Length: 337
Image 1 (tube, helix red, strand yellow):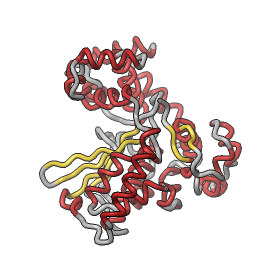
Image 2: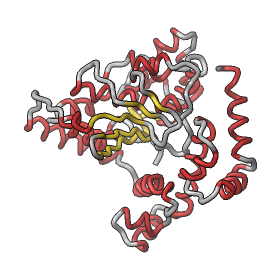
Image 3: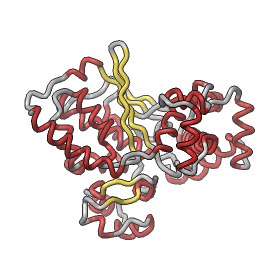
Image 4: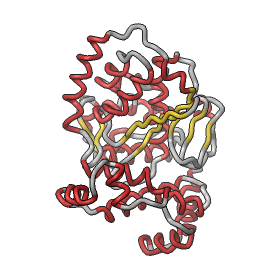
C-alpha cells in the first residue's frame, strides 16, 4: 500500500517556493501532484510525490523542510491535532500520534520507548519504494517537537535530537529548531527527553471530549491503516541489527506461529524473503547515500555478520560496491553544496 498524505501539507509551500526563486506550479507538475491539491487540504496525495517535491526544493534551499515547518501552523494536522490537544497527559498524546498518525500521513510512523529516566520518541519514515529523504526526517521530527510543545511550553527543547543522515553543511536552522544537542549518523530519527516529561498534565483535558474525538479518529484511521505486509516490514526493521531476523523470530514478535504468518503473506501475494530484501535495500540506500556511518556499522545495522557479506550482497543487487555508491552520491551533490 503506497503512502499518502493530506494535501494540507502543501500549506505555505507556494509562498516559500516563490521566495527562493522557484515556480511552485511547475514543480507540482514535475512530481505528479495535482494543482487542485493547493485548494483542497483534505485531498490525499502520494507521499512519495511529496517527498520528491521536498527534495527538489532542497536543491535550492538546503534547509527547505525546516523552513517550511517554521511557517506552517499545526492546524495542517486537521483532526489529528484536535485529538492530540485533548489528551490528559503528554504520554497519552504521544500514544495517540502512534495510533492515529495515519489520519494525516500513512508514510510516517511515531514510536515511543521508555527506559530508566529517559524516553525516545522516534519518527519512522516508511515508503514504498524506499528512498532516503533528509528533508522528511528533519521536518517530521520537528513537527513532532511542535506537538509536544503543546504540553511542555513553546520554548521547550529536547535533551537531544537524533538523525540518521550525515550533518549538512550548515547547522543554523537545525540549531534554531532543536537546540544545541543534535547528533547525526544515528540509528533513528527522533528526540530524547526526560521520561518525567511524559507525565505532564493537560489541565484543560475533557474526558468526554477525548472519548468523542477518539471514536471519530477510529473511524478515520481504519481506511488508511497499515497493511499486514507493512506490519511485517516494521518488525523486520526492528530485528535486523540483532542478526536473528528470520521468519520464525518475526512471527514470534507478532504473536503468530510461522505457518500463520506464511499464509497471511501468501494471501497478500508477498513472501518473507522478498520483504526482508525490500527493507534491507531501503535502509542500505539511506545509510550509504545520506549518512557517513562506517561501512562496518552499516553492515551490522542491516543484519550481516561481516562487512564482506554486506559488500557481496550490495554488489549482487546494485552491480557496484558500497563505496562506489557513496562516492557517486557525494559527487552528484557536490555542486549544490
